[in-house]
Amino acid sequence: METTGAAQARGSVETVRRRFAEIVGRTGAAELMLYAFVYDADARIRCYELAAQAAG
Image 1: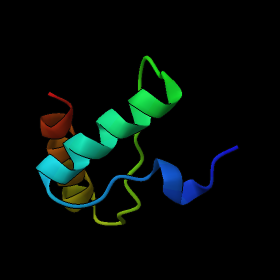
Image 2: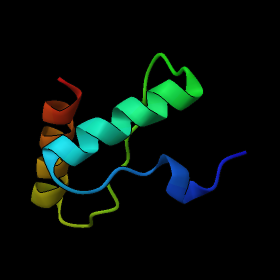
Image 3: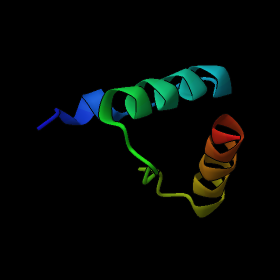
Image 4: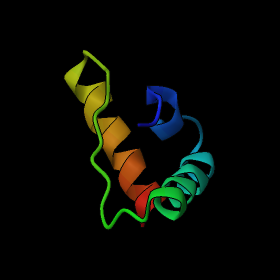
């Protein structure tokens, strides 16, 4: 089992894009599940928008 940090992606859209690719390459995952640990709803939505850019 991986540590929590091994499956985290933080940073710029480009950094997160690279992390997503690393995670998928290492695990062979067909999909990723995301959770933003952000209390503010607007900020959390923005996190998901940025993650979608990284995944796109």
